Image 1 (cartoon, rainbow, N blue to C red):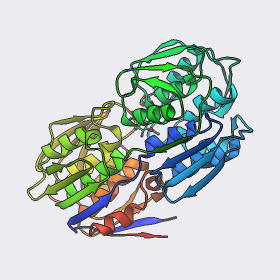
Image 2 (cartoon, rainbow, N blue to C red):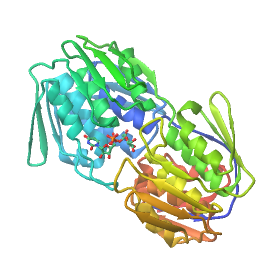
Image 3 (cartoon, rainbow, N blue to C red):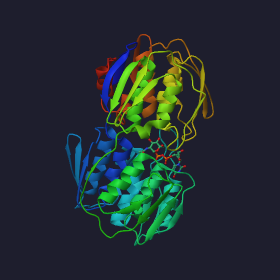
Image 4 (tube, rainbow, N blue to C red):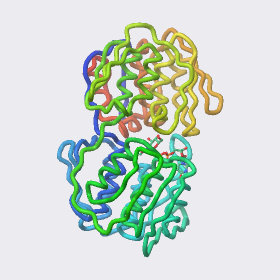
Length: 417
Ligand code: UD1
């Protein structure tokens, strides 16, 4: 089992390139089965969740090739509509294959994704909406059986703007009979990227990025080539690393518009931020200031995926900050680990009160989930002495070679196998 070992205290300086977005490439890979043809996807990060998606595609009958950051999927020979349990278990978000498999094969069998590190991940909104498209769904013995002689367009209202449910409905409705309208959808940039991808293969979708999406069903889709948008969470994580250590770091290949909520919070902490077309430079020379309240919200609010990394930054602020986690109910597992490093944090339900301390001290800590793991890396960079992080496989789900990128910025960090 790998561990990450950090000798804290180095100031970060330099430039780091941001990869393609994990949360954009995953639904796009699920969408590749729709065209029954060639999909060329550029700017794909090398991550465990991406490999898990490719394994599912191969199981379904796709031919998959990777050439550096480009993935080519030939989906002209789909042979199966079932995703076995062990592949589903590799990655919770594999439930987005439901929409594309049912769309293409008119049948789908997937195991229920169940709960995960950050709490239960219900899919009631996905299933309710798919039923509204005329898909028959039976849940039995941990499996979801879907059947649809035809998929009929409908007007759908989501109770909550779920990212995964929005993607699943889009994928299921692309080739439906008629025009589907979905209201109260997620507005995340990754949904816009999925729309762009599908439209590039001949779909007729509009409205992504607003709260209403319209999908005119089409009969056929064709070959497609696409470049995935930059990963706003990876980029934000490196900015948080620069904020906690001090120094000046430029992230390149980003869309600054996608990071506005995080940039506002970092400015409140006393960081200076310079935005250019595709780059953001963060510089901190004065002490870290606390924030009033950060409330995680659907986009364009503060992303829940940055809650943990931001909390690490706030542990060293000159005063008390409050974080309210409104999206996931069990996303404070990093708190106990940060406290082992000397942080002063009190959690009451979904609210964390962070009282800034003078210093963090290196400790042996455990990454319990992906973003919580990133938070521990960030804390370790600023801690006095050595921090050893276990559970690195969680971090590898969402960050490509995090230790190499941070080392290039001047951190003393290594992976030990
Ligand atoms: C996606 C992202 C994840 C991010 C999250 C919120 C991917 C691969 N993952 O996850 O990184 O943290 O958006 O921005 O894109 N819910 C229900 N019923 C449902 C669906 C969701 O109750 O049927 C609840 C969830 O339990 C959670 C909230 O809605 O409390 C948000 O979930 P959702 O937006 O669906 O997140 P994911 O798509 O799973």
